[in-house]
Image (tube, rainbow, N blue to C red; front, side):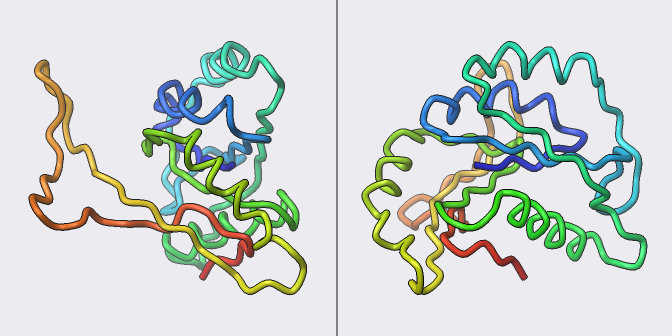
Length: 170
């Protein structure tokens, strides 16, 4: 399990507890120089970040992976893809690779993790790459009464690739 960490790192306070119990290991990818993919510096409270991790990581599952993810000659999108590939390499081969952003909250991660565990036959050597997609509902704004979100009415919500057995990103 992976979270990409940047200026919205504080949202991990909400996201991590939703997946922590069922995750085998959690990597947090953080730019060494605290730069966005566009090369902009972001504020980062080291003390608060590590205090939050200490509070949440009772089973020592969380690993912070720092690297130089911004490259001046690449576009922000290319930097994102590069970061995801470096992180996949850091995690190593085998198993399901799940990548989320700090502002993406899993509603029922336990069921999703059980689903993936039941698909372990897809992890065998020589199997084709499989991407598992999930529906998501973007939350746009929090108010005193709740959240503004996209109402898809009778249509299926947007889906995104969440997990893969062959982590190569393009």
